[in-house]
Image (cartoon, rainbow, N blue to C red):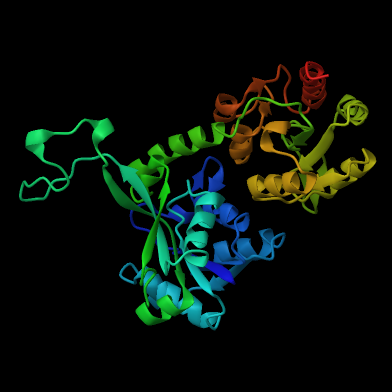
Length: 387
């Protein structure tokens, strides 16, 4: 069965201006759900937006995945009063209803993971449910505006451990069969199944105060990826602020030069001897960096990467590695998501303060001043306990 999803993104947002592009732990909000969708069982993900910047980014930066396609959203479906169903219908028509299961994802639920998506899809594909949605089980006592208890007897208040609680729609994932969507013109219909998600996913980002809560929840979630440490099998190196001191000489014709430490370069010989894979990943597409990495004869070099978190996961999948087998050396906020989630997140001593806060190790050296060599030596020492 062909399973597709729509991720609707409006350019306008009154609660939080530019919400979908605002960075949550160094990544635009919408990329958290999009990445999980790419690594789920979905066949296609349609990013549906009236924002030129988002559509341009999708076209340029997600060409590593054939699953992700940007579609321009009409003005009428991107107003404050337009329903999400209107957006879904517009996408369905644009793709000629070429799907068996239609899924709705919400960027305002960034804690959604690929397993949540897969369980929703499975509910519709492999059971007798016609549609499904994600919910959170919460043990809250509900009251009406008229002062009536809704889900318990206040004269016989149950203990929390004896209380079943209620299931609350968290707005993260919806899935339905094609026939159901056509008949009801709604994200749900027929026999509806529920898929429980973690209680922290009840928070959606609608107001500025929600953002602060979500950032803390996301940071905690990423730290949970840090399973018991394993032997480090690969290291990801940022370039600017790591190999270099974050400065570059520029003329009217472009980039002139960056300075690299020769001693840093020698460290890669040691990595080769220890069978540790070096991975270079930078957001800048620099010819100077390309030439330097060719000189070092490094195989895994990724230049011009704007979504480092997704690319790291892609490389790990290709190498058959997990995040807790990875060390990551970065210095700025676009490294936060990876630093928080790998086995060893590491930064130079002159990194941004937000980066130092989430890093497992802060090196004694500054970027461009042998910090790469220092990390290589440290990783080799760490690995010795496994030999």
